[in-house]
Amino acid sequence: PWEGPFESVFAGRARVEAGGTTREVVNDKPRGAPGNPLRREDLLAKFTANATLALGEEVAARLAAAVDAIEEAPDVRAVTAELRGASA
Image (cartoon, rainbow, N blue to C red; front, top):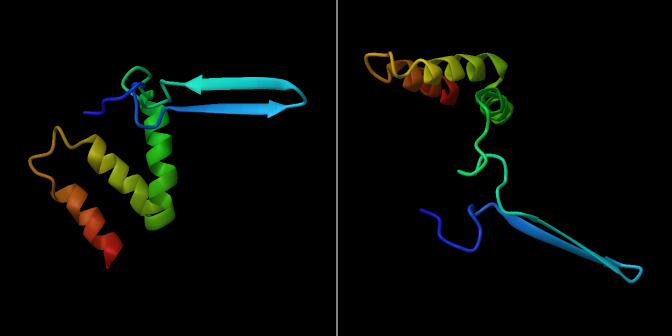
């Protein structure tokens, strides 16, 4: 697990100095970190946006549905079938 001064490896700090003024923003719990989990619909939107880049909309949607139903599936063939078809 991640260990460090922040809760997440994706945490960050930005500091800007301009015109004699300094502003600093710290985000130690970015969206998706354990202390700030993504809502299901946000996670699905993020997955879909990224998967669509490589797989196209139809395959990304089928893959998302297969992953969503994985706990009820007898095995992972529905997921692997979508991935195999996408790489062909």
